[in-house]
Length: 205
Image (cartoon, rainbow, N blue to C red):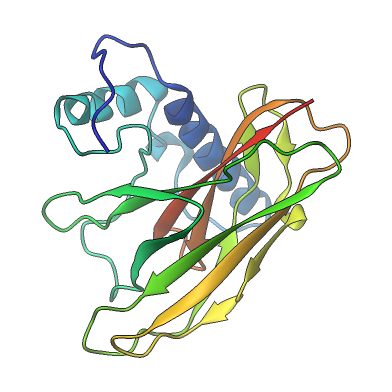
């Protein structure tokens, strides 16, 4: 996927969504008494925009999916490969993991349920550890949320032998009364520092 054109574009929608999702996740964990990150350590929107700016100059990068991933993650869970309906990603340099976009292809009406299928592939010579997959809330630009309790990931727990793959599905039920607009969240493992993919969904009226 080629880079988006205008390098002087103000903070993009997905950057703001990513910031809102991270802030929401931090607040949720803190309210449960789980200290995962100091609030002061959460990057500002300007910091995120400054970080993504060089990527806009590099063809082949997905500039709208900006997440903070560790330089030294645990063993690789897998690379997420395209199956249905669409999966986009870029290959960062050095020790960074790829970041992917899982996009529901069609807008969903409030009260309706939609899904996206994906495939996890273990191209490592060793079996992965057992991981639990789950999602965050999906956050809209208005601040409205589709709660994670309305989202189901199949399978919930996975372990992938070397050279094999596992098919998965994310089902999202849009609650009645959800305002129209674009919503974004994260698919990740139980380790909050290992963000696997960005989920994007459009809600129609």
